[in-house]
Length: 73
Image: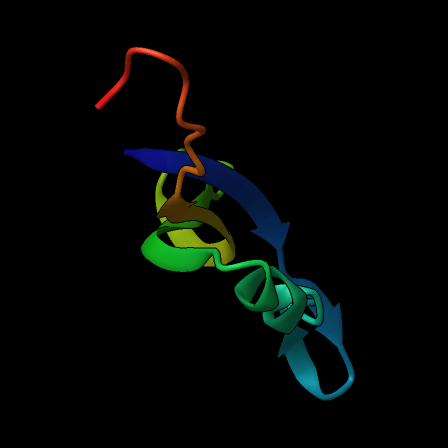
C-alpha cells in the first residue's frame, strides 16, 4: 500500500531568473517520499493564451507503514 502527498510550488522571479524554492525537497526525501509526478502550472496572458510556466504541482508517494493486528496475515 502507498501513501500519497502533494505540494504546489510557485516560481519567483529574481534578478538571476526564476527560482523554485525547492529547499525542502531533500528533507522530504529523507522521510522516504519519492517524486512520482510533476505537473507544470501554466499562466495565461490577458487573451487567455498560455505564455509561461509559473510553478509546479509535485506528487510524492511512500510505502504506508502497516501494523500487524490480531487475525491479520
